Image 1: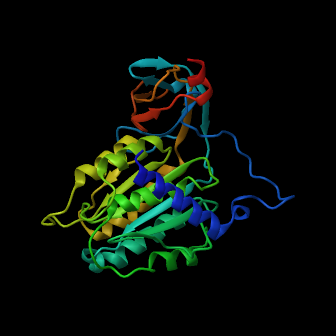
Image 2: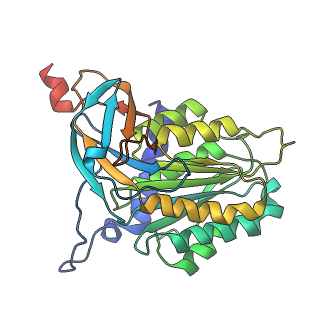
Length: 319
């Protein structure tokens, strides 16, 4: 990570922690803790995957067991050590484009974002990043996350569509804030009508951090066909690598059902874990998950396809 990105991460951490305080991220003494059946980490000791499974007709498949899955890393079959399937609360970010070209689309986009929130787990912790020529947090400075629909509605309406599009900077800010979430599972929904034309971050920076993150990213491209800045390939790539989905509605009315489908997908995903083979250097590793129905029929799987393997400090010292 270069110096610029390191400073960016440090400054965001300072701002968020100073604004909300560490107390905002911890439960009050004596309050019952929510059960935490597993912990998601992508390290040399454990990889946990967020997995969506559909049948040939596109319907979500929700009744599979561990025996129905196979996981391969760099082509080698892995032993599944953790398996879960539950509708648990997640940390979710909504990154919403507010560049000038979004002005006529803003009401439909906000309606769709609110439909996503309403269809999500009521205990999800959610935040908003609005972006045009720079990204901004939608919630008040003293608040990291919210599950209040009125607060989130105000956050979505906070900006005025104008200027150019800093898509990469917005994704970077959202990934940073996801790290502050208390939920193990994390998702990001990016809604934009075009490519990037003003960010200080570059695509390699974004892809590196997507690989480092445990977040599942969904992208919704609502650009016009004659938009010279449109870049659907980038939206597809980010979603594919992270295990999410890329959507390109043909009309604005399609955005609401897409957002509801994304909420349902997040709530019905499987979590599958395995311990990768150790290594003494950082490397990009490739993942393939196979799922079969009870009758042996192969199913469609969507999950993270790559991650950055990073050796533990202690392990590296022993090398």
